[in-house]
Amino acid sequence: MDVVTGHVGYILGGFLVTVELTLLGYVGALLLGTVLAVFRVGPITPLRIVGAAYVEFFRNIPLLTFLILFVFGLPDVGLTFSLFLSSAVCLAMTGAAYVCESVRSGINAVPVGQAEAARAIGLSFSKVLRLVVLPQAFRTMVPPLVNVFIGMALGSSIAAAVGVAELTNRTQQLNLEYAQAVVTFLVAGAFYVAMAFLGAGGGRWLERRLGARR
Amino acid sequence: MSADRVLFDAPGPVGRRRIRIATAATVLVIAAVIALAVKQFGDNGQLAAERWTPFGQLSYLRFLWDGLKGTLLAAGVAALISFPAGAVFGLMRISVRRPVRWLAGVYVELFRAVPLLLLIYAFLLGLPRLGVNLPIFWKLVVPIVLVNTAVLAELVRAGIGAVDRGQFEAGEAVGLRRGQVLRLVVLPQALRLIVPTLVTQLTTLLKDTTLGYVVSYPELMKQGNNLTVYTHLLIQTYLIVAVVYVVINLLLSQLAHALDRRLARRRVVDAGGAAGGGGAPHVAHETEPAGDRIAPMGQLF
Image (cartoon, rainbow over all chains, first blue to last red; front, side, top):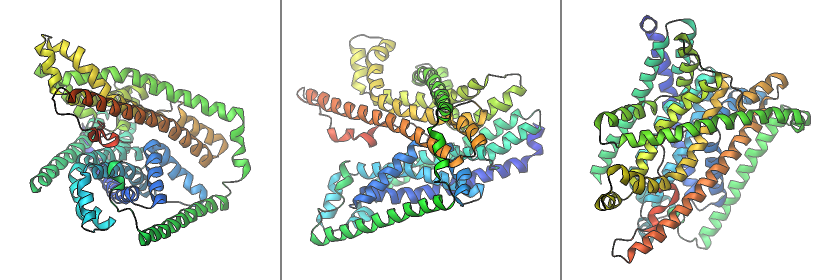
């Protein structure tokens, strides 16, 4: 236990990096994923194809494989980014594929008549989406998007494998240095569980609020 | 795909022209991005033939093939253990005995909220300190099983929850005991509902095995890594590895889609039969594949 109490700052610092990675990755994924979803439901065929290809690629490539290509491969073609930035970008790009699918199935869950009615009163594609369909789609999107958040928090640990000093990485470092550091794994686990539960709780709260306003 | 094409009117002449212009612009942008990437690769000598031809050699291919075998073995063993274990925990979660339900609940909630890599480090570095030192293969597979059992348990529970309540009641009405109702009536239907998702879960298992890279178990990622140590053909090796993963996973998700569609068709047929009996017919629309599938929680990458 004294390994933990003696390294509170070190562990909390790692947790902070994990939180930063998670939030950066999540916000990036939300933005990129929404754009991709609009591509996929829009009238421009090449963009539909780009959206579909993007989703298929990033849902099927393991995050670690992509991260290692990004971190160790890109310098070979003359592009070098910091480890932290690379990890955040990889998380965002992978998460975007899942956000895109959540948004798209949320859009699909809105009754067809809503879009038809909006078109009948003369709204354009972007207005149909922005004023009628997306506001109604948002509520059904909450659970899958919470899912993406939890996946992001847990997935950010992969950054440890390329040497980002986040929570998992620092836990492993402590364990290398100290003989009695097994308890650090429990502490790190507790941090992740707390993050996941916080995300799930926030999602339920959001769902209730959105439900009440309907 | 129901709503995909209803968000915009069938375009008139002006709209068609605009769409044509946007299409052309998009194609140009995509071509420019590809050209830029190719130029960047070319400028840094990554397209040179001697950096790619080695992968035509049998020895290189066999090296990566050995890795793929390791990947498939780890994923296969993990699947063989975690699928039945998931079913057991899923059933425990709906048990009539509170302690059983509680125990399974705690397990599922905890192991869905802990990153796989942290668990792997615990088995790799933590547990040996306590005298538990597994072979490398199991240092990878046991954590994968622990996490995926929790995810699968939730899936099984969701599948059982999706079976019509009337099925339980009918089972009880003909005098079956609870265990019999579950085993003979509900579970077969629940499993059929979650089969597509179970196939998708195989892709997750496959992706999870990439963490063999961390424990130095010779699966595809680690073998790729070993290859780059000798050849320094980093981009080439990992691109090939990435393509292998994407192709296998694409095949698996195509299979899942096909199963989804079959399931949807069957439900429509079932509903058609039931409609004559006066019950409310199921709406075929609800079985929209992507949206209606019972999705695994909290596990993405």
